[in-house]
Length: 200
Image (cartoon, rainbow, N blue to C red; front, side, top):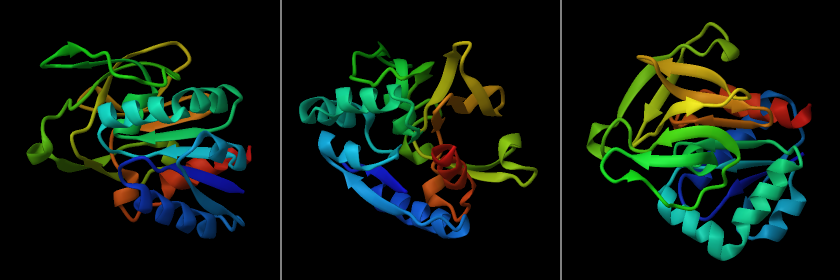
């Protein structure tokens, strides 16, 4: 199995490391590739979109041709996992509490409306133990850094986790998204869940 990590900006190496550990944990013979060009998508079975700065990432995806290529990849049923700004990039619509609706480039692959930087700036980052039934009874340590939240969602979207009623993890068919950073923890369960989705 080959998993790609979008390598235009953000926590790339952290996702590579966690994916390799998840391969070992699940006893899967796998390899992680950096995805920088559309042709790299032809070599992988699943794609991880890391956190970073969503506006910059969207522009880089457009200029590189990756925006349309990733849409095609996901629409073929191949699994995609986005974290933090990866969730923003997957959304059909994005807004900001200061500037309102944004015109930033997104993949529009998930039927979700996202508020970016919903918990505040970098200085207001925090960690919280999360109840995520899909992962089991043990709480998952969520690391939130300028994280978005899902404000509304369509019929095909399944909320996986909330904080005070605000949705911070969702799944829609072959696409998984979290507003927090599983790659910055030592908990492999989200990466394992993603790999299991790829093998199905």
